Structures are given as C-alpha cells and as structure tokens.
Image (cartoon, rainbow, N blue to C red; front, side, top):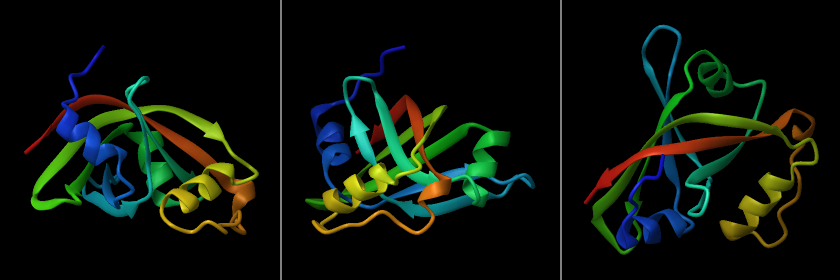
Length: 132
C-alpha cells in the first residue's frame, strides 16, 4: 500500500526533530514517549532505536499499532501525524542505529549505549499521514 506523503510532511519527517510515539498499553491506556527517528521515504517506513526490555517494546508485541507526531520546526502551528504498525524488529546488538540517530540529532561523537546487547530497530510501516 502506497501512502501519499506531501512535500510539506516529507520535509518535517526528514528533519531531526523529536517526535512523540504513542503505543497502547495492555490496560488500554496510551503510552507516549519522545523518540529519535529516521524516515525512509522510499520504503515508506520510520525506524526507531529501542530495547527489548522496555514497556513500549512489549506494548508493540501485543498490539502493533502506533502513532507518531511531530511539530514543524519552521512553524509550530503546523504538524504531521503518522499512523502505522510495527512491520519488523531488527536486532542491533552493536547499537549502530543508536549511534547513527545520535549523530543525526547533533552529537557527532555519539557512542553505543550500555544496553546495546538488547538493542533493536523498530520499523513502522506508514499507513496514514495527516496534519496541517
């Protein structure tokens, strides 16, 4: 399924801005956390670094639906919301994605974290994009 992503939304998704990722907890409450991310326009996916030991990972194992939102860095009255599902979990025991994202977000000397052994890349398949 191909999703239409406007140039405006693509610009926001390509910027190194913090996004808020929402997942559903087992009791139905929404868990929201700020996240680093990487947008792949060709594959229409968004990738995150995470670990297998945290609640967000368990939430996504039980319910793969997720929503990501971020504010336009050039105009705080504009935003993009991306809805999708967990499409893949890729092991990353060296923490390479963490390092790459740390560099993307402004730390050229980013090092792999202590929890690298538990690191994975969460791949979100984009299903819907909206905002203003």
